[in-house]
Image 1 (spheres, rainbow, N blue to C red):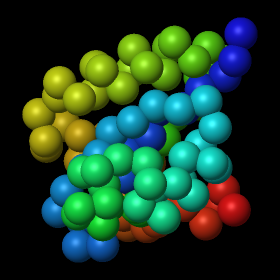
Image 2: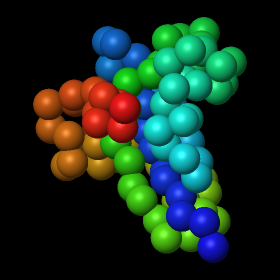
Image 3: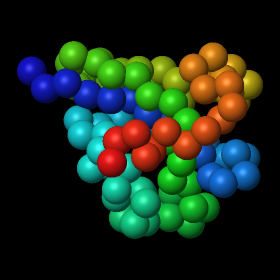
Image 4: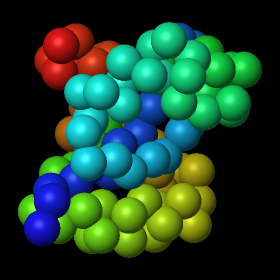
Length: 95
């Protein structure tokens, strides 16, 4: 089984969130940076990695993605701030 990641991105002003799942976080971040991963992320310049979780099974990452997408916005931000209180872009860690 392939491992996977659930991740949350934001824009430069930290006003919008995008939640996704992938088997290769490094490659997916490159696609978001180039504006080739999602129409929504391209339109709103959402490319800063705020949060991620790693799973041993890719299907679990997709399950977590769907769970968090149904959360209230405040719950999402609270989750991010527990791991990343300064809301830094963690994307460079995967380059």
